[in-house]
Image (cartoon, rainbow, N blue to C red; front, side, top):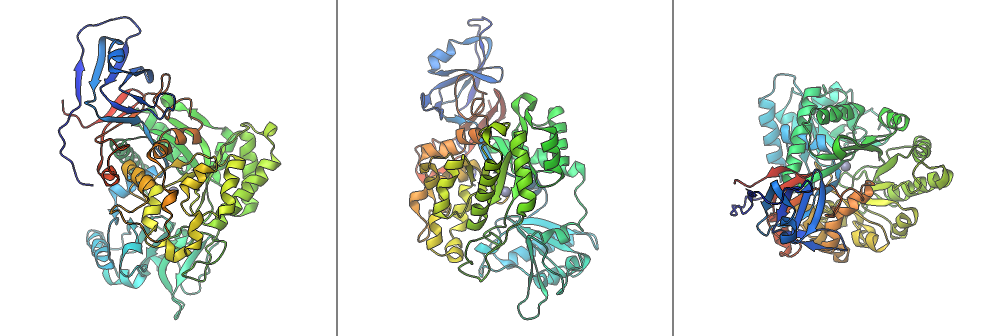
Length: 562
Ligand SMILES: [Zn+2]
């Protein structure tokens, strides 16, 4: 995104002594163009904060009356203020890792891809692993996967392993495959695929979903210090973009321990609503110990199990009801019912939320079936939380007959608008026009009576709030292009998009009484923007930048210089 050198209009003044009663606010934000996401008072000019909470929302003059002698008054200079934005589907450590390692994002052809990797190989010691992530071939000409032979030419000796942007595939060179013992006779592991050359039967170097683990397990893992740095870099980047909370879509036990340590040390300001991967030891521990709610001044909650149920559309691993339109495969499920169903029943009894990655229409139908079975098996009076607000992450390609089932069961679709504007370049070919009817169907979901929690899936996508907001309302790529049959009627209104990144994620996290709108009594989380995204022309939205981020009344990022 280009840097805009706008005059910086935010100014901070310490008011001279005014009323000095004990009820004086700590900070007052005045002269704002405030969108509250509260239907009872949708617009305001000013917000007063005491401690971590909002104590007043209304006019600037009424807000100023709450000033005491130590009150800080922030003049917003007419800038647009939203409730602190939330990304409902984010991989914080992956975002930090992307910033700190070989970042292959934005490359448009195989030659440039190989050139970048080659320069990394040149910097590496003999035999050292070369790893990176972020490449995506769907925008290359031709749009085909890189192969181990491509990589062997630039790295005959160092093992190379490069993860595709979506994390559901990776390409390895021959040295890496050899270390992992993968050859033409290796069978596909459950929930994964070793792509093989149709003529020779030799592996091509591409490994999908669980097959990636065969190589990844050979790579020395990051140290705790590495992961700590990734968390802090990822959190800092998030705050600068205007995210006040991220909902972390999967973590290990060690990640939870590390996050806890960083909060305890006061190094993390970002709010994190955290899920742990399951089935497995992380989920077992959460089910046994119970949830962690609102720790560290409402910054850290761990109450969710993340299940990954199929692959991704780009690598043809998403599980479909009928074969892909450009292949004879139908994708695959990556978990077994025999392991999920007992865990789901336990989760309902223990008050643990479940969120499941489901991209293909088959994955979505089967997970709804399994949720339904668990909800019937453990009726409301046996659940710790009667309405468990379970989620489906992505809900990307859903058979239209399955869409109403979400509302009936109280299941929340958690969807990523930017996927739709990237995938529009290849999804029609891969799915056929007929199947696009239930694809990225945000408006159909909202009309069916559910809320849609909006997210970015960063680092699969850039992870920027303005790109997501634009994608949701425009449903066109960043140049303004849309493809045939891309269902413009599924775009959302700006009011709906605002809720997708504020009040609806709060609901999807059981936090609607604490945050998600600018209202008296709620936590003072604010995102201040350089333009009025509720009014500017669509193509101006992605150029809008964050000027200030406020979490719990504290200004944690500000572009101002005065
Ligand atoms: Zn994800």
